[in-house]
Length: 501
Image (cartoon, rainbow, N blue to C red; front, side, top):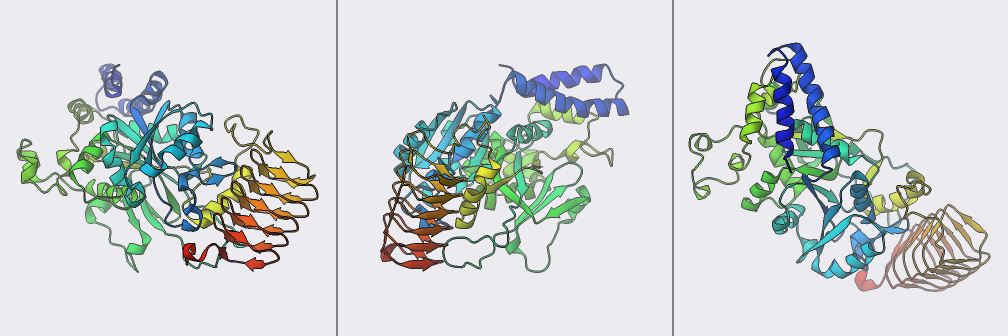
């Protein structure tokens, strides 16, 4: 199969041969050619130049009340496990295969769960020892032998309605080093109550600088790194004088990454995370120049140089790409006639999914919020989402008072029971004269008669005895709530499992 670069290169050379060099017509045609060429190649060879990697080994450290008895990637959202969402997103984009990175102790559970989802995408489970304790860059590094092309990384907790092909096309168009997906920060209503004790902790804010004309990602840092002032380098301001510093965009943890970045990562083990360390580092290196020793002697031994500073040992532009860039009148800016991309070999871009919903279900608040919104955001009648269903055919439902609920396999719902805007996992049993509203009920949960459950999360195998009233609570796995008790804004679990927030 002919590589993408060669196809696009021939297309551009033919274009130049028929158009006067330096003319405005040539520049406009070349700009259109990049877009046309990449979309045409995508049709011919759908995503064969990319591998897809789903990071699903995280332990859910910010939601341990839920993940103590269940792996984070298998937590139910609607009536499907969390990992279904990134996999179906890849499948809908045209990916035929995906590598799913999990911890060794999760492998069998994840395999069984995925097998039940009826996905067409072929899944290769890559188990990593103690993945819960590793950073995302560490996990990628440990499976490097499976990665042989440019690749796309997506987190298992990304729940979004986006067109990944647009991110891929932006990456192709500019021959980028990394392209990141950004989404508007989810707006949580002021009256939304997260189950469990009150938590005043504010969500993390990212400061993301994007060139207004080119979409170039020029600045990335956590808002907590700054107090009152932000220092911007003179080089950045000179090259990108017109950029916007965003504070209300969410890094979706979906990246398209050039293969040489993995080579660099293999030789720089100090970088352990993608979002927190690797991406900010590479974004900042766009505006530096190769060390003199790299320019003068490319055969210098890697042992003789500082690997952390020597990213240009790996960021080597292909000779054909370099020739095209130097000969072409194409410019990624309309404000000057300088060389395209300022001659930068390292180039990072951001695709903003405006008008699309999305969030990362990596906290209890976001997990509960997406469960309250999933039925609204995901149309259950849409053929693109075939797994989201209202009532399983194997469920036994005697109640007529059900509104906006999903009821999974083998559930038993007694008569005179009221269910509203809730998700019930497999094998749930709810006795008569019980009311459940705005709640997530996981698998094998039993709720006896006369209970009132409002805005709660009930974890696997918990048992709610008769006459119990729960409001805004989390009930831990296998925990029994005693009959007739009343609880509000609590985490109910065994004393040795109680987590203070």
